[in-house]
Structures are given as C-alpha cells and as structure tokens.
Image (cartoon, rainbow, N blue to C red; front, side, top):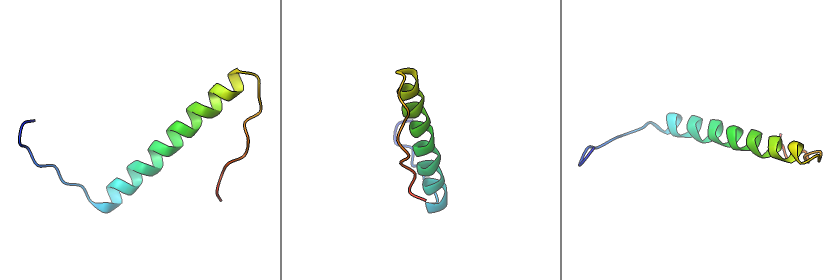
Length: 45
C-alpha cells in the first residue's frame, strides 16, 4: 500500500456502517442465545 490514496463516497461508507452493525448485532444475539437467554429487542425502528 505505501502512500496510496483511497477514496470512498458517502453512500459507500454509510452502507458499510449499516451492514457492519447488522453483522455485529447478529453475532451478539447468537452468543446470548447460546448462553440460554432470550436477547432483548434493541431495534430502533
């Protein structure tokens, strides 16, 4: 990579943030269920 410049559109960054949040939410919910608990509903919409 070195001194390579990388640029992204705002749309691409926002889509990445949304999909990354969904991924981590799924991981946490899965771990809570593996422990035998019912995960809380934390959806904002």
